Length: 144
Length: 185
Image (cartoon, rainbow over all chains, first blue to last red; front, side, top):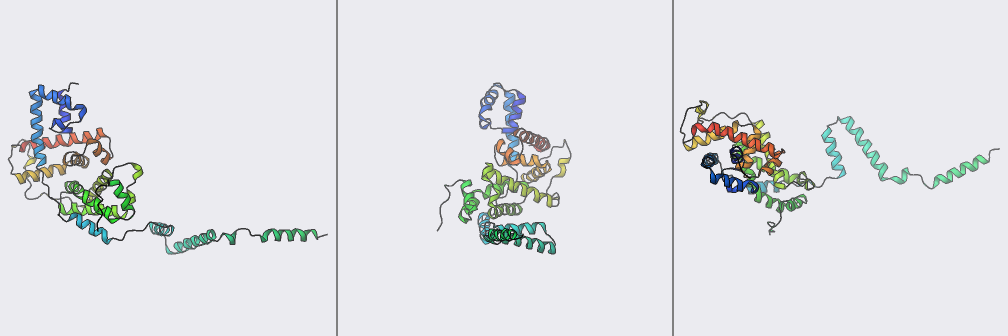
């Protein structure tokens, strides 16, 4: 593959002045082009100069205690326990910020549903029902 | 008594953090704080602010490690670069525009005039020229040139296609070259 000037310039911008570090699939073509053209070598020198300027950008090292600071702040924070259904509902209520009467009504509903689901015996048909029905039928037969 | 967790990869450490293991959190902070600080510093141009942003990002991880979803098959560092980048962008939006310092060589607004600057002036000039770039170009050049990430990884962090990322890098570098030219020795 032969690399033309336009492609070479683009690759210089994308991958930098060190052609040896270009992606494998274009590296050899780049090196070959560089070997055969003084114009390409000039472009590489210019790019290297530009990169040296970019690298001279101001940089301040972080405080040497940065990691320790982050770790100690995290230690002070109580880790949230995995959320339960109750927590989920509370978070949901907090999210919607409902007015107090609506909150009370909603709470009563939730409690009602909870009791209903937790106490199926009270709401499900019991063994007494057939007996009652039988008694009723028996009573009906008594009617002349 | 400490356990050595250095043999674990990032993703395994996050799983331990999800179980509330502080030592896993320590390991991940010690492993990566500096690299994320580096990006934050280059995006907000201030040491203390960059440190605070990195701290906030790690505390988010500690409080809600489930935000990193292993099922999405995104590397922890890629995801965390995104977290830090977003915090920096939000921070910059809230911040008032920074007035040019007294040391700023404003002569760069006069094209064609060759001016030789000392090292410190060059640094300030360079910072200002980078600051003037559109946000996405700044981010692209920071990730690829200053952080040394591959185009593919930078594109993934920015949520753009590789071609788009490459176009951003090229435009950023061409703009900078053009503006720096008058100051070259």
